[in-house]
Image (cartoon, rainbow, N blue to C red; front, side, top):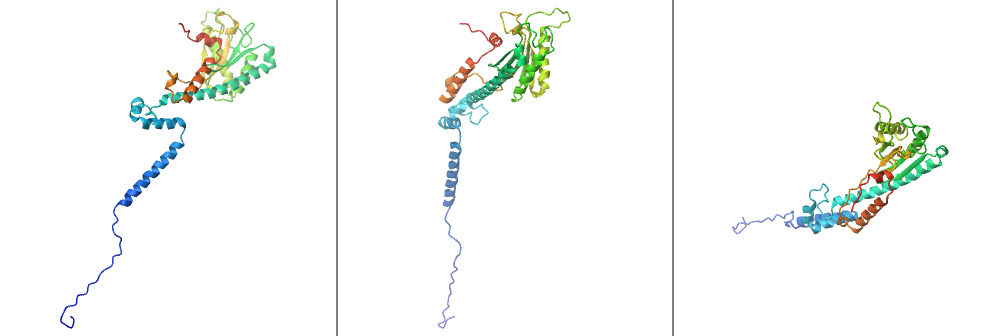
Length: 302
């Protein structure tokens, strides 16, 4: 107590060391920052895409409902857009086909040169045809004259020119990895035997003889996918079924990318794609075909 009998009250104030409550405004600011960064990275990602993909994304955001209705069944994440992805894939196939076309043309030129420059084959007047057709690269060993240069008449045993020719061809084919199809063809002359051996067996046996030689070369057996015997059903000279030129061996390297037809070029995504498609179609129409291939094409009537 104090001297006057009054009670002395001492008040002690404790200073706080914590921070005051600032609310949740910082969370909003952080969320805005994260959203802005995500948008920035998405813009940078889109800028790095090719033009066709950009058009697909633009089409989706322009009309997402129409995109989904038209293409929601596709497996591609971009197939929900206004750009038909299947058509774009077809254009890609056409571009790949064009690249294969150039490879085949270069290879065909090398094979022609090697066969033409060989003195032994030139003296025998061996006949060859190396072309790039709508099927792929086709190399044909064609009989001429008496019709026994590559095979004796009625025999599936290869003569020396056939062995030499296929060996030279195999050295060039080893530079590619495409599958190989072998075909045998005969003329329409019937066998006089009664054991059931016909042109069907003969054509297949000759193709198999070529298969065995290629399989033992640098080409290898794993690349040979088919051996076909056509007998006289695909004559090289349709007007003369007995012509020696109908007796031949074919080595075919099919195209690995076969584009599907596009019903309407206007449905392609942009002008560049349409131009590419029309160029490929024009090139396909102008591509040389063997007489046998032309004979197999359907006839169009008005």
